[in-house]
Length: 169
Image 1: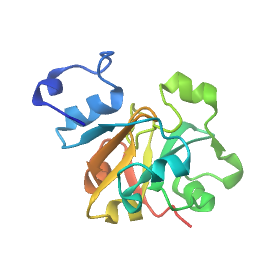
Image 2 (image 1 turned 90 degrees about the vertical axis):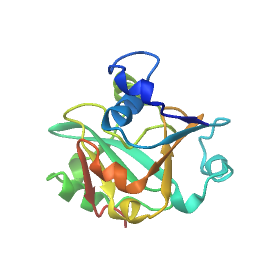
Image 3 (image 1 turned 180 degrees about the vertical axis):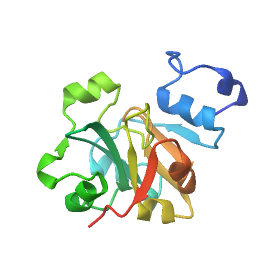
Image 4 (image 1 turned 30 degrees about the vertical axis):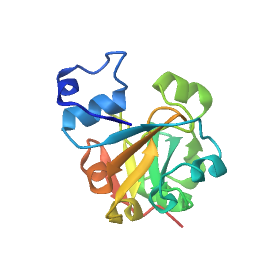
């Protein structure tokens, strides 16, 4: 388990030893913890981790005309309502697409470890209302399938480019 020491706050974005999502959290000076564990890609592997499933958050990456990348955070047990997502993005359902592997790689995102934190201008992070309603910390992607980020749910909504919207079915 790693926590963010104050000394890391002074490091600039883009330093290879600090992932972009960690640099964003350190710059915002918010509390968080990173847990390291065996790779967990499937739902069964995620549920076997020592974190409460009711507090697990998944981050989906989508694209649409005019917005090349959108991050969408939901409770792990919830399903995305694509019509609500389209409405939140002022587009149509037919224009929404999952981000492909090439786009994820170009953005430095890894399936199974996408953090619900916008890593650059132009990339919004839409967070479902159920995520921020959680009074306990949430557990979400931290850059790879071997790491989990623990963070107070309310903090996610205050990060740059975050917007809380009803997105679940």
